[in-house]
Length: 131
Image 1 (cartoon, rainbow, N blue to C red):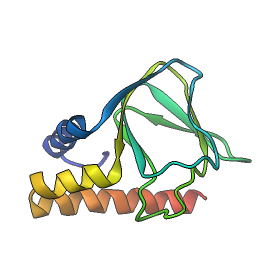
Image 2: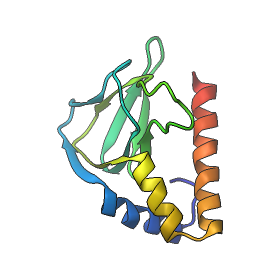
Image 3: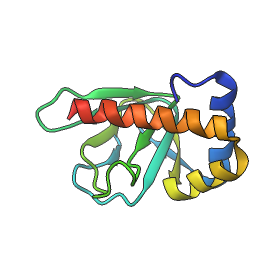
């Protein structure tokens, strides 16, 4: 959600609350494991930090507020490419990308959707560069 205007970030978070389920993780608890199936699952990290690690690479830290997950448009294999563990106690919202994006189409104007999609594409490009 970085790079989006505050008001748009807030609207996205509100809409996520409509379709997401709360999730809490204790420090050290896994969020997902490498090569596990993931459907079209996404997470909004509300509080805390997650370490995302790929084999042979230093872990990256994802801190609240941020999105993490696999969007079918960018990774149709739908397998986690890394493992993730809570570094601190974490509060998150778990959601299905398809349901969330359908809601965005109904509740946001064209310019807002365009900005959100640009942010997703930029994040996906950064992720591919990190592979």
